[in-house]
Amino acid sequence: MSSASLTLDPAFTVGTVDPRLFGSFVEHLGRCVYTGVFEPGHPAADEQGLRRDVLDLVRELGVTLVRYPGGNFVSGYRWEDGVGPERPVRLDPAWRSIEPNAFGLGEFMTWARRAGVTPMMAVNLGTRGVQEACDLLEYANHPGGTALSELRVTHGALEPYDIRLWCLGNEMDGPWQTGHKTAAEYGRLAAETARAMRMIDPGLELVACGSSGAGMPTFGAWEATVLEEAYDQVDYISLHAYYEPLGGDLTTFLASGAMMESYIEDAVATCDHVRARLKRDKRIQLSFDEWGVWYMSRPESEPPTEWEHAPRLLEDHYNVMDAVVVGSLLIALLRHADRVKIACQAQLVNVIAPIRTEPGGPAWRQTTFHPFAQAARHGHGEVLRVEPVSPPAGDVPALHATAVRASDGTVTLFAVNRSQTDALDLTATVRALGDVRLLEHTVLADPDLDARNTADHPDRVRPRPVGTSAVGGGTLRAVLPPVSWNVIRLG
Ligand code: AHR
Image (cartoon, rainbow, N blue to C red; front, top):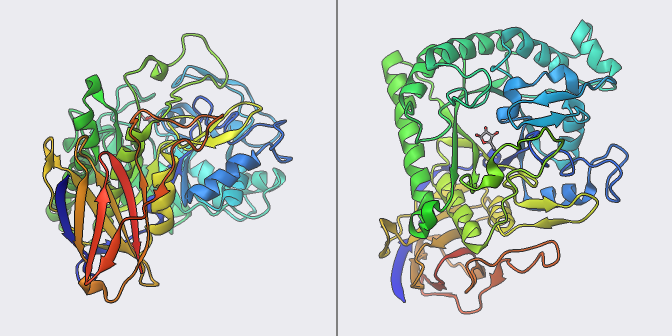
């Protein structure tokens, strides 16, 4: 057992959590949409084919916002195919799949309303441009009296969808992207698309594509070039990051939260550098609109060789270690809540997702469901500035932590022990919180780090209460097992 310490003091804060930090992502990829959120004929499906069992889990997960419809998919997408009575079947080159277009904007908006989530819509800036983005915006948001808004009305949506948040393309720096662009090409296109969209609807919030990862050779330079062009037209720049235990290196994998923090700090530095050069007051905020654990180097992540509808793609089956890493990634986002305003765990159902389904069968929670659900439930309020002290686990401290003070004064400490060998004996000074009691300490850990949930055993891995923690004399004492995700609530 090693010792670790930290102090919780409401006088030292990072910022207020934007509820949109607990977002997710639905892409037309694999079985995220088809046999995921949408499966006409399933026993749990409603009259529109939306799976009620999945909707229940989405609400339980606490998701606040959902990005749609991609991802790489959007860069070859014609939004018109997904509205109205005619739904052409198309090839989706991004995932080498057959797209029936049975699910589109209207179905998504109905689903989003039922799920209680804010929509975040992406426009295609790969194979399309300013005009098509404006057309989609007019169809979605204009009240009526024009060809496209009346088309929406004839499709049954009398009221405008009023979508406020839009992504200007997806991962346009990636050579794999349909219609991939240089930073200068994309920066101009993003600026002009944003300007035209705001001429139609001035109140929009717009996200420019940042790099598709901190490891991209153009990371930093891409953001600077894009923002030099589009600074005045956009509100956010995107970040994307996926983590996996490359070469079986679990120590580095467990340090993913630290890598995410330095990526965020580098992106902030780049945005603020451009701000200084352009002499602007406004600050560009961050939209971390794809993050998660993705075993990208496994063959299941490759597009299929045959054209198929809803193939089983990217269906990673998560274990205890993956859930702890997801917890650490959530801690990283919360620790930067002053600049990260939007974040989307990628993705929501079946595709690298916390929720899994079987066609015609059940929906169930992966291990990674739990840290997200707990953070989304207890992570709203003011983030306290927490500086943990602990022995190292590889190149980073074993203890990764943050705390959030809710409006009712309850404080939740989220803590991950990254050590694979030593429990941490945590002493937290909580005197500044006043006379608080321990409300609960739950831990997600297991002697078998590879333990997983399945459709037959959906609760094998879940957070369990800890009975040994205590608060007294202004001090919290708790033991954090090796490789564990802990939620400790005081109030
Ligand atoms: O989420 C899976 C894919 O990862 C998305 O389509 C793409 O944007 C990213 O590369």
